[in-house]
Structure formats: C-alpha cells, structure tokens
Length: 189
Image (cartoon, rainbow, N blue to C red; front, side):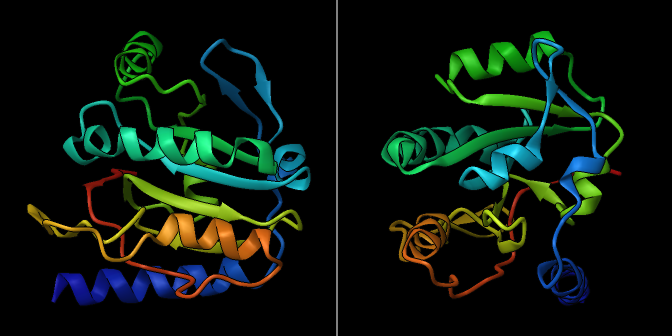
C-alpha cells in the first residue's frame, strides 16, 4: 500500500513540474568549496543530470561506478552531471571523502534546506533528474532497473533508464519512460 501511495505521489509531483519550466535561477546553492552554483546556466548550456546522493546509502555507493562511467561517456556531449547532497546530515568533509573514495570527479552541491529537492520532487538517494536545456524535467527516477525493490537486485540490468534518457534528449526526443520509481534511501525532509 505504501509503495502504491509513494508512486502515485511521485507521478503527481512529476506531472506538475514536468510540464512547466523550472525556476532554477531562484535557488541559490553552493558547491563543496562554498562557491555559488548557477544551475539555470548549466541547464541552458546542455542537459543537466542531477543525481541525489548520500555518502552512507548502500545503493548510492553501489551506483558510483555507473554514474562515473556515464559522466565520462557523455562528457563531450554537453551533459552536466551534478551530485546533489540534500539536508544537513553529512559534513562537507564527509562528502568530499565519499567522492574521493569512489572517484567521483563531478561537481557536488549542497541543498541544506531542500529547496532544489522539493522543486524537482526528489524523494530518495540515489535518484536522477534529467533537465533539458529549456529547463524542463524530462526524466525522473531510477538510474536503471538493477534494484527493483528495497533489498532486491537483479543479476543483470535490463533497462538503462538514465543512459536512455540522455540519448533521447541528445536526439531531440523525449525519453520513454519519463518517470520510474527510484529505489534507495529515503530523503528525510
């Protein structure tokens, strides 16, 4: 019952934000060095992939290699990968250590007050949000179908949702599916 309610809520929230432009310029966030980040500029210069992560979430740790490889694959295609750390649960030092340990040479940003998290309706880590250059969410959900329920994983990945979404947007079409249910650690707002 909880799973159905959560899925319905995610679909409703995504439908509401997916059809209108985001107002990324209204949110001021900082990266791990304390520098102000302009997500609106990143989105307008190419595809923006927000990956909500948590250093102590086992699935986030398991997906670091996948994210790193996708970042490398799409580096020359104007695809901006940004790791988002929501809340105040981890120190900057813990996040930097996490990124160093798992070789995530990606920009990390802090969302201590959940402004971005709420704007894009992120609910778990890891969860990816793909934003097209016109600042519309075109995909929200799981990275792939490896984890299909809490604690259950497939032996072989069949659906590469994030990779497929990026390829579709690069080819000027909309991803299908546009939303999947992310599996992972709940972001406690």
